[in-house]
Length: 244
Image (cartoon, rainbow, N blue to C red; front, side):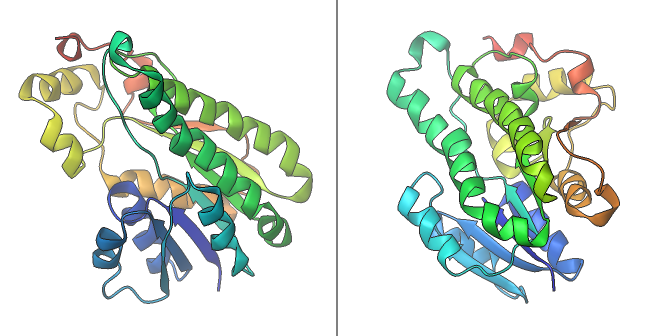
């Protein structure tokens, strides 16, 4: 049975991805630092193992891989979002974003590499449309995701000789509970106007691309950044409604 490890698996895209892998017959290691939410998410899921760990903590990352003997896919989905004006983003806020989004992704992949070598496995790093194009209020978040995109290319170039593939997925606006809770109607309308498909994406749509990249169907695909965004990246993402 193939095994996938999905970080940030307690909710949103991570949970949708984990459930998709399970439906495909994979064993899934679901990792999240929110133990309470992770336990709720894992109820009734067969072939799922719950790991309450924080990828920004080096000791937690080491502990995760101490017991893993097979790994076919690593999905680095865990991330934090801190949106605010560049002038109000102190270095503590900057570091908090980098510790998880960039450093955590780096740590997890470094620790997973021996197992991925053995399986000739796949890495999928979840970046963001904000890593491809600058946008307002995202100096730390966008920069961290741009770095993840480049990190993905480095991984593809250096790990390809072992049969390991590395790709990045850059979601555009996704209809998650968190997004719907914080997006005003003006922002929702502006996104719909700016996205060629005129709607937000769904968690399952993002998860489907992630699972494709981990599958044998994508066996010659590596070093790529795929924007799953309804065409949003082609139009630019500087929305006036976000500036107020």
